[in-house]
Length: 162
Image 1 (cartoon, one colour):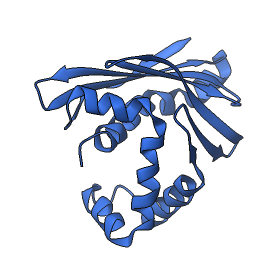
Image 2 (image 1 turned 60 degrees about the vertical axis):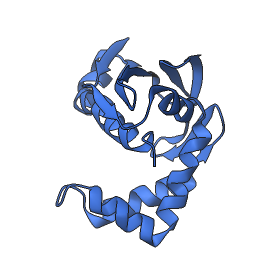
Image 3 (image 1 turned 30 degrees about the vertical axis):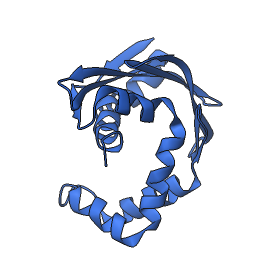
Image 4 (image 1 turned 180 degrees about the vertical axis):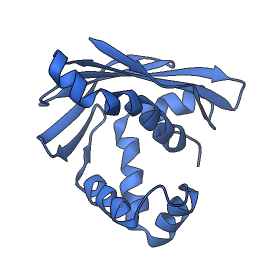
């Protein structure tokens, strides 16, 4: 298994709160609600770096997120390769949530590590591991190297208090 790690990110929430949100994937349902609320969507857009994300990309992301389904243990989404599910397979409160892909063409594991950073913040590190043959790895390696930081950046905002 090839592993790719993110940098350390900061979540503006105590470790126990960040863990509680990560350990119950239903908490991500609030993203769908925010994207369907025009005022909340404007707030989200204001936080994005200017010029980095095109309006059509935001609309595509909104459409994808609208189709996602969340349970306590799973997040299911449609992809270009068909439906994919991420399932929590391990919880080690309050410091680790491990997820694996199900019904996916590639076997992958996602480790979300949470460590206290003072009383009001949490350090976050994401590791992505994937079982890839040599040829596939060469085709997707660039994206896999970027994935942990993209996921960690996203989670550092979503898991924050607010």
